[in-house]
Length: 134
Image (tube, rainbow, N blue to C red; front, side, top):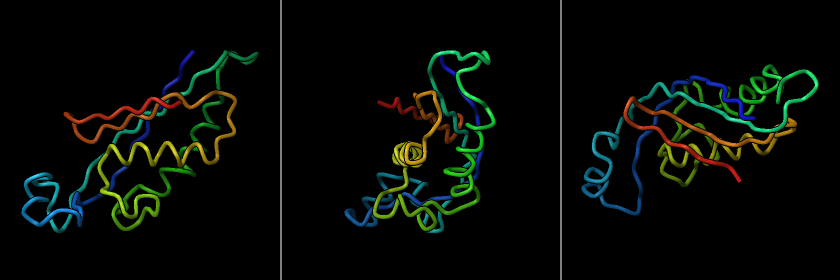
């Protein structure tokens, strides 16, 4: 059985790498390379899977919500991902990299009986990124 819970957060970032010239960064990242950054209203789906227990659930929703709030939302909501999230230091804060980072943030404190199965982030109406966990 799989359960998916949906969360929302707002954050800003600038896509830029020191490995490229200013012109190359502008070409690769387009408007996402704005020197002042830009923001998104992200939608984060966290999926867990496992057997249904005696309570009729695979995980207590409140426990999952508390873990996501503590490990992720409290650290990314209304933050600049380039500056405020240590786990992204030295990386371009693409949503692909953010998905890997969120998975690691959750796994670090994971004590729930269900297994973390997927992290899915929608950055815009056209860009959604899914990470199936191992």
